[in-house]
Length: 182
Image (cartoon, rainbow, N blue to C red; front, top):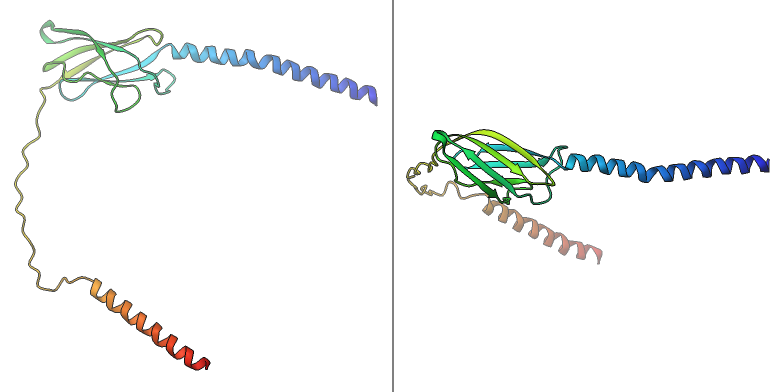
């Protein structure tokens, strides 16, 4: 029986050593796969509804971008106009959100955005730029004060009267409660 226990212990120790030796190799393989995916970005380029461009940068596996990446924008517009290269700065709206601000004139533009190494990527989109428009002027509103004829006095006088009645009832109960005990 002692020999069988020694053999089983040796087998379990051998399995444990094999698993512990294989774990770092598996972790390195997983990190290498993630690093391969992390070398690229997914850039989503769109117009901002006026004369600018917005860019959302994420990792290709869907993770949000935690670090600052210096994106570079170039654009070709109507009549062969060229803009760029323009370096974009991250905006406070969220991780990986970039905006050019008013940069384009009205018309259809072909916009290309590139990110440098190590997160190298490129995206191209067609953006329709429109002249910025101001909101319409608000229409004046006549302010009238409703006539107070006492009908809408509110609920608070009734609540105050109820509290006074409850306090009076408790006082009477305490007064008679003491006399009865005597």
